[in-house]
Length: 201
Image: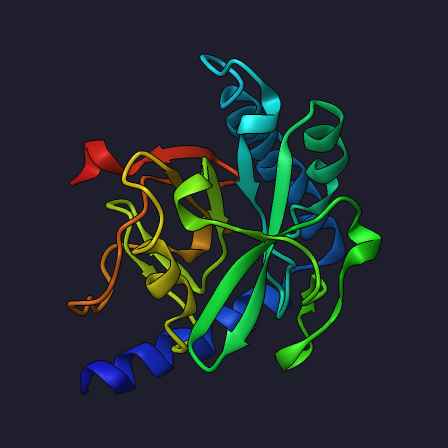
């Protein structure tokens, strides 16, 4: 099986597993995951002079991804700046500041996106970014949907930015086909807790 065929197989299998979760299974798992997301996001407040200096990048869930939108009000209540992805052209995206989830509307691929008129976030200003995916490894590698959007964006953020994959435990695989352009994440959050990928390398 070629690398492309292996990736395609994993995408089909794991996307099907995600959408096959029962409502109860999804609800319980997402509650646990969001608790870890909250703790990690709020931890960025330590050592910062002002919450307004902190930029947290979230995502709008699609195709059965873990929905972390419930943490948005808490982050905003603590003064954190929140951004969501906006597709700018094929294979490329920016992060755009969002003040309310009502600011999001369906964009390319039907995924909720901010307005193109909203302020863009400079990648070097990103403090923490939560990243969805189809699969992850304990060492931080990620399998996405094949467009390369996050890999390209992650190369633009500062080295000190905290990168966090978010998924269900069954999405964590022993190994994944890895290419030269794949960017490993620092942490992966599942319903079983937080994987520190640096210790797994």
